Amino acid sequence: MPAERDIAAEGYAVLFARRYLTWNATNPQASLRTLDAFVGSGIEPGAGLQLPPTGRQAVEWAEVVQVREPARGEHIYTVAAQTDSAGLVYLTVGVVRTRQGSLALAGYPAFVGGPAAGPASASGRLRAVADASLTSVVERALRNYLAAAGAELAADLTPDARVSLPAWPLTLDSLQRFDWSSDGRSVIAVVQAQDARGVQYTLAYEVDVVREQGRWEVSAVQMNPDE
Image (cartoon, rainbow, N blue to C red; front, side):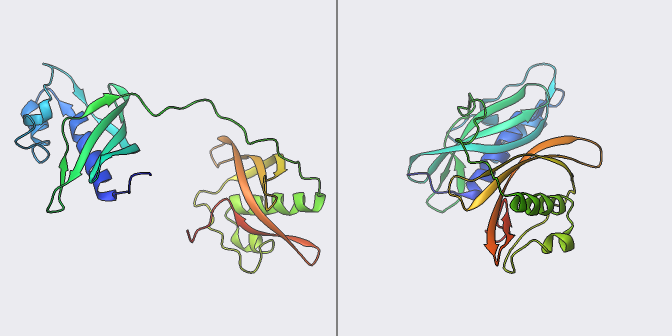
């Protein structure tokens, strides 16, 4: 079974990773003091970190990308961190809950490889949409959705549709592919769009559709804002 999520422990692991990977050799004591709150009797000062004579490193972003639970109450988090000098690194950080419920390191960190990944794979063979009226409705709906034109989009929505408009408007340039989903309850639209700066994107949207009184209507676009 997957480990039960502990958001506070995740944040603790990320905070440790940020402080562990952020240092400045011109002031090593100040750099290592940021780790004082994490170390105890079982871990060396600075979590065993010894800085070189020169150099510095900052963390641009860090987040948990993987977790395992070797024992009840203990989580081993893999934290991906983008640094300005070493690039993208992966650090495992063990976190436990004490009997009092507080968070503590489970030991020293470790540098590891990232989660296994491979090239993108397309969905299985899907059936192309042949209904011209459905194509027209979905293309118009997506054009208004991407433009954050809520009033215009409403004309193609079901009465109970819940749609959250993007905060960053885009212009739909073209509909590249249009297929039925594998369960036949929605359609998959691959579109080309661009932002106000002229940056072009290829995007894929799952659009839930229903046919009411001979007319196609949209009930959801890509996600449910209430979930």
